[in-house]
Amino acid sequence: MGSSHRGPPLGRPALAAVSRTCLRRECSPERVTLVRAIFGVVSLLVVLAIVALVANRQLRATARAVGGAVPVEASMASAASAATVGEQSQQLQQRVKADVTKALERGAAATREAADK
Image (cartoon, rainbow, N blue to C red; front, side, top):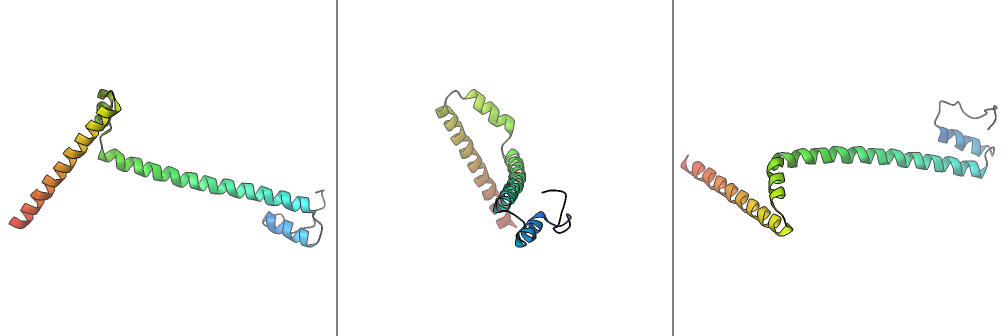
């Protein structure tokens, strides 16, 4: 690894440089293993960063979609007023039942309006 660089120009990918150097039998197996390990770790870090970015975007999109469906203040108030898990469950069931009933009533009204036209 001295100052005498006899491989391809430094602007080319390093893996190609190591491969060509090793084809000329100027490289030890330890160096090849080290370079492969370094590239393996770097590639894993790049993949991890990409996955983290995609997951972050997905979580933001999900938070926006869910945030519009249930008002945060209403859910926090009902959670604060319920002392036990059983009470919270009862409140959630009642809220879902009320929402389903509203949706059914809206659907029936829309059907009636469509039939009247």
